[in-house]
Length: 191
Ligand code: 5GP
Image 1 (cartoon, protein in one colour):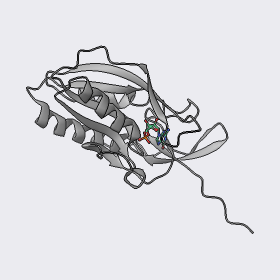
Image 2 (cartoon, rainbow, N blue to C red; image 1 turned 90 degrees about the horizontal axis):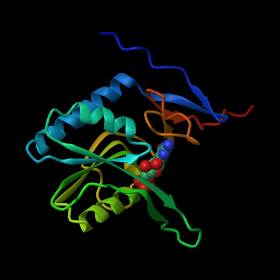
Image 3 (cartoon, rainbow, N blue to C red; image 1 turned 180 degrees about the vertical axis):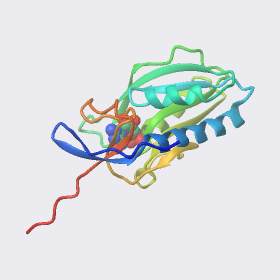
Image 4 (cartoon, rainbow, N blue to C red; image 1 turned 120 degrees about the vertical axis):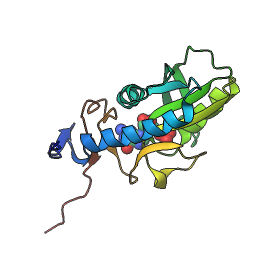
């Protein structure tokens, strides 16, 4: 089947974003992650925890490509940079309601940047008795990664640049874009 041509740039709140990963390519990337997870987690009833808001679309697509027994839950976290602390603090604004003891947890993220969020979530779930925690991320900025282990499953590695679409936002806009777009911050040459 012909794939639709990758789209035109979009404007969000005065900034221009250019297409980077088209929807067909995203579907193939998610299918590859789903295949790897099915291999590893068949008969282990994994608990697939979606990190809201950004991972909602990836999570929904991923679990529907996994024809095995699994359960889902959702957390919402926000990073708070206190100003006095350069490391920042991560706080739950909604935590998982499932009992974690002995569970094989898969944290489903939209993007792993510095790694701080998923590193903290790994520790949190292990402290609450999870038998294992792995991370599946749609996007991974390897160059920006500073903390903990890289994601065990990443559909795409991308450069250390700002992206929106497929769940990711700029000022809460752009999450509904069906492709991933890159901030076009290359300034036009002078003269
Ligand atoms: P980390 O804790 O790995 O540094 O960052 C994770 C969070 O930062 C992601 O869940 C996401 O909310 C945000 N983030 C990091 N890079 C980007 C990006 O390029 N675009 C958007 N929209 N959010 C990002």
